[in-house]
Image 1 (cartoon, rainbow, N blue to C red):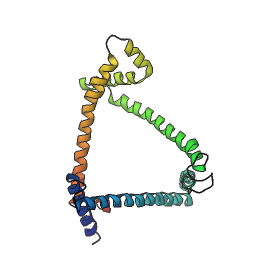
Image 2: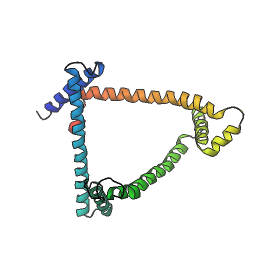
Image 3: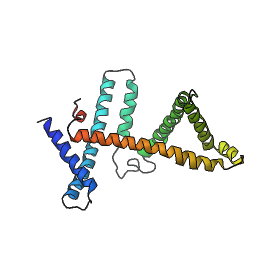
Length: 216
């Protein structure tokens, strides 16, 4: 029963949402069921978020108690998490108002750390581009030239230089590269991802995929 009940629930809910997708949401019974399931999805998502917070607190506290390597960072995580979760009250120090503890932590800690993280990612992207854009084949050479042209166009000095050249290079890049080849590749990736998601959903509905129950 512990295995059968989740499979039945996944089959019924998946079938109901699939049928509701092809019908009008105002269809009697089917539309009401789909709306109810969407409401339950939001509720379960909220409990899942709470479970994640409790889980990360529990794991971090265990690391602090056992003095594992890097435990001091776990202390910072716990303190920051609790500070950001201070409930809203009438006091100006609490809540998410300007000048509150939450606002100060967000503006002076979280926002700079997020900016630093994304700035660091730029170096990893440049390193990956260097390895991927090696002109070993004609296709790689074309990819390299296109990437250089697009990156050169993205910076102000590159755009200013391109505008001085004969012909409308920015228009060419926008129309043929970004809105042409790039859009075609993106659509292919989206179609492939959608087919993969549909296949995975079908496996879950039919009970073939049971990893959500902790089973292979």
